[in-house]
Image (cartoon, helix red, strand yellow):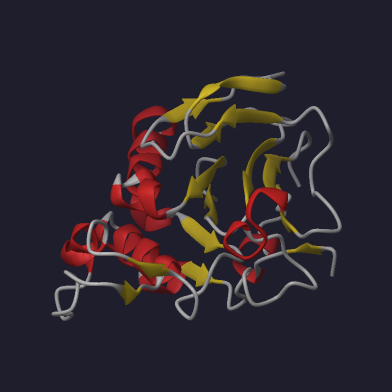
Length: 218
């Protein structure tokens, strides 16, 4: 269990994917990646792309054989796959990126560039800091109010569910609820398997989440 997979993505024979742990990355050393800035910027990885492609927090590709990846240590890693158009995105979504709508921007870019329909997309949010440990202050929590209208406490210091917020955003972008998988693990609680910035501070490592379209369609 050094690399984790989501069942809904693993069922796609044309896709390779993995959510890395502190023990292993699913991608080779030369995977295409970004200088992550907690933004809403989505970058396209062309055929043959490797290394750092610029600044941003989501990568998409329709090119077979290209590993695209992001790095996390409490932020939520998200993979989006289109089984109709054979396109894939990897997304780095911390609380800042989530407030900026990075998951929804990735859905929009897949639609604009690959012709993806939101209702066809399959999504998986990998291990991230859980609602048990993500405490945010009053300078942040009001920004989550649009996604949690039933909560009246989002003006103070409260605990928030990052993965569930991303799920609500994906559903608002048109993904069917049944197409969205959420990992249950909390990176801060599970020291044996995961790096965590909130737990370990500057000493924390990073975990790689990566995906690629197989070079030869199955």
